[in-house]
Amino acid sequence: MPQSKILVDTNAYLRLAKTIRPLLFVPFGDDEYCLYILPELNEELAATKLQSKFPWVGEEEFADNREYFPQVGRKQKKSIRQTFEYVWDHVQAELPGPSRVDAWYIAYALELGVPVVTDDQDMTELAKTFDAQVMPTLELLKIMLDCGHTDMKTIYGLVEFWKYFSDMPANFKADFERLFGEKIA
Amino acid sequence: MQEAGLTQTAVADALGVTKEAVSQWLSSKSFPRPNKLLQFGKLLNLPFDDLVIKEDPYAPRVAFRKMRGTKTKDHHIEKAREIGRFLRHLVPYLPFDTFEMPPVLKSPSCDYEYLRVVTKKVREDINLGPTDCVDFTHLIRRFSELQAVVVPVMWGAKQRHENAVHIHLPDSGSTWVYLNLDTNIHDFKFWMAHELGHCLSPSLEGDEAEDFADAFAASLLYPHELAAQAYEVLARKPSTAAKINTLKQMAEQQVISPNTIFQQVNKYANHLSKPEIEMGRSFFGAVTKFNQQFLSLSEALFGGSELDEHGKPSAHDYIQKAEGSFETPFFNLLRKYLKEHDKGPGYVQTVLDMPLLDARSIHAELT
Image (tube, rainbow over all chains, first blue to last red; front, side):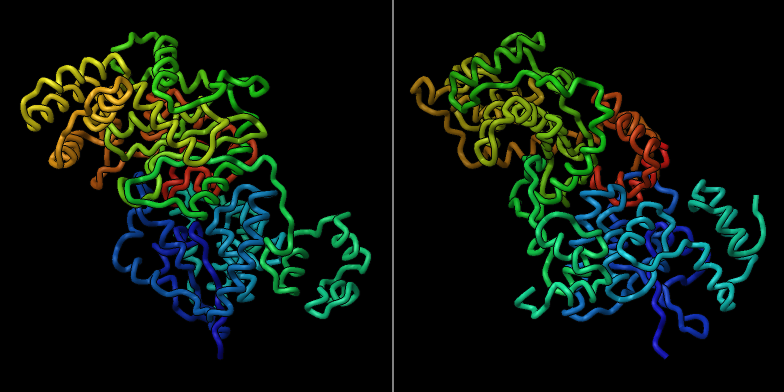
């Protein structure tokens, strides 16, 4: 059975990868879901000049896990680049907010027909504008939970971790209640 | 469309729109929604630039202060323009009147006498005598008088093509000067003066603009009067080694590179048809060694801060020091825009051209 690829943007990666290990390139569930990042994500984490709340991203375990990317052929690559140009022009003309890397994620998602996990509101709006599939981190956790790839204890732990770092996803409370059927403080 | 063998009806069917909509797009009466434009482009297999005619009379104008040995390519220019397009959103928050033009030079030129007069006037404007040392604070003040926003960035000492970027937005008349703090203190001062030259000469473009900004910076930092004195001293020195040592002492006094002084001295000599001062090959090695003795501006700036084990400052310290030392309104503009428009770290990442991790830290600090 072919994999059901899911792309994870940088913000979602930072929210999950420290707790769910390894996060990427591990198939789960009957649909063989498998999480991927784009190579550009590694550039977003490299050559930083300021102190960060995520010093672990440079550790070998995590850096090694970030070496797997969706395989695309030359023709597909060209097509992704073409899509990127349309998406990035729209960002510059109409929707300032998403970064170049965000626009690449949308282009890949459209071309590969796969969803992107993001909590960034600008990126979500961009995805919707171009009819790309998008889901918040909590929805990915719900899929993982339903597949038995994670459990509620881990999810509660993640929520505490995000609270501690003041890194709550947008619409967190409403999404949590919608997806997990319970209110959370 | 004809080449692809498509009729308006076929396009309309494929895109799920009416034939009238397609007809209006083709006659420029309306513009497709972004998703339909993309689908249309895919259907015709056309890159964006081949499908859409873009006219941007107010395209941001950019100028670079390049790192040694690098070449400016189209993608460098486009990237700086992208930053410029993002900067437009900060213009409404500028603390100065964008309806009035700041005073700029009418017909900037690299003529020795012209530069001598212009830089003398700039020195007078910032209350400096003809031989006084130009300090960072003098340059900073002049930037704000010219309604230019200084954006201090940490782009690293090696990885970049440029060390400073000047972005002018013609629609608002605003100017944004990006300065890389990870550079030698002498070079940094020269680039600041160079960027000031750009701010005073918005009518120039390309190499002409770069040449003027370079000549302006050198003349401002080491004017005619100093060059005349230095020429007489250097001409009397019996050996190259003695000349190099003297130049290094002069450079230390003015906090500029010995090379700037050397160049200015010979411009003075040429102007008065005097013989040039010869320095020999060892001079350039001596200049590199001399400059290496000094800290980069970021090292000097964050020296008193609490750094982590990798020597990195916090976003809080970066913003505070950059705001305090450069009197820049930039972070305040950014703060207001992010809050009012509920923008995420992606905006910060693009406008400061930095990795997302750093952008996240700054975003968290500003919101």
